[in-house]
Image (tube, rainbow, N blue to C red; front, top):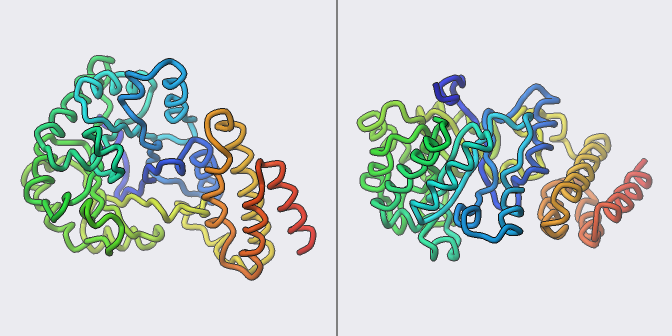
Length: 336
């Protein structure tokens, strides 16, 4: 039985985000969600190039495999891959199964131009025949590994326009275990509010074509309370949260412990977590990723209280976690 069938609904999951949901951040999320008694029901890896896993030189493959590293604390965990090549997907899916992941997700919604140029991501919305073939290839690769882990898809409601009646229908014809729909078109990017009013049409199609497929909505959900409200309003099986996780590792516990950032105790705790996150990032990924990538988290962690902006400016000057610790220690000392 697919692990998805064992989860109690509604199901809340963590979105895959490049240079965000890496193994360092996922470990922090797992730790601080569990401290407050919560946890995202399912985590996704960052999306990883299947073509790179299959075709890159050994040094490149090792770097990509770091994106697929995980710990038991993160389970259930789904690996997300992207490619426009069915043969590559079959080989990469076999690898994912052999690595022990709980599931495989195929990205069919990323609007990055370089990814689209390769025929992957949102480009597949314009070629449903190829998209369906890639889903089948993923299942073939998993079977090659002697496994039957579930295959899911993350996509959008269309490319230049709403194509639920055609594109979403075609994906559902392949009966994915889960279909996560970012409720915008590729053209809309994130420039307009997510079209949650379209969820009913998607669910109707699901019931008609593939009743066993779980449907998750994605887009503009700021916390777990709103996620549960969206489930109640629409009847979808779950919600994928993405940007809401920035600076809020305890998001999935729905803890209010760190919400009042004007309190010095909360500020101190937030800064301690930021430092822990940065040190973990440097230890795990410092040989393959620049510390500058870690800095995208600084604004999310350090905001919402008087004095946050000047502190953040100082933190941005840090070249490593040692520099960061010095600045944070000075700030805490001056506030104490």
